[in-house]
Amino acid sequence: MADDRNIVIVTGIPGVGKTTVINEAVEEVKQNHNESVLVLNFGTEIFQIASKKGLIEDRDHLRKMPTAKQREVQRMAGEAIAEKAKKAKVIIDTHTLIQTNNGFLIGLPEWVVRAIQPKTLVLVEADPERIAERRSSDETRTRDAQLVEDIDTHQRMCRAAATTVGTLTGATVRIIKNREGKVEEAGKELAATIME
Image 1 (cartoon, rainbow, N blue to C red):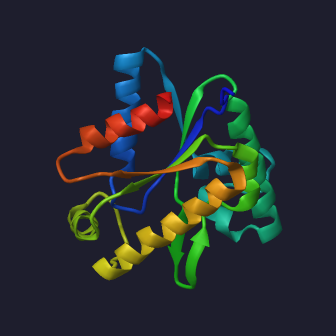
Image 2: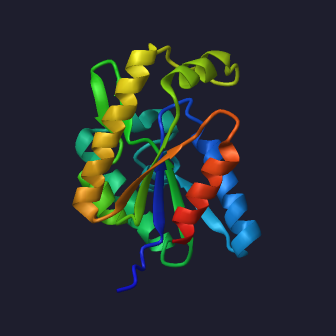
């Protein structure tokens, strides 16, 4: 039985190099398969839906919306992404979990993943020590400081959340290591997942 799912969700904690791996994979697919991949940021998709509905004026207001409205807009964004995937291969760039002062917030709740029906959920991971180094040396971003132990915990929690997505949707779950100096290898692994 052929799987007609066209969506790969790519996640990774801040500082892991997720965007760089995605860019490498998109270029790999273009060069070696002569196909293009539509890369969608889930937060941007949510913002566009909420804006069109007149619910918010800027992205910072998303988290201030009533919870029920947030869920509704998340679901609608998932449905809009699923519609786009009927015509193209899609990567959704997002987070499995978002660290807050009150614990981890689920970035891919049930109503979103059921609407999206991903083929695969990819976790981009790196050694916690490397992530800590990248965060501290990245002057282009303002990142929360985290202990190496906390970074390790965050990645492990993301694995648990990814398994749940697989359970709910039948998607496969893949871990791709973004090793120092080997982003091309990680990009090739992601490209293979997209083209599978």
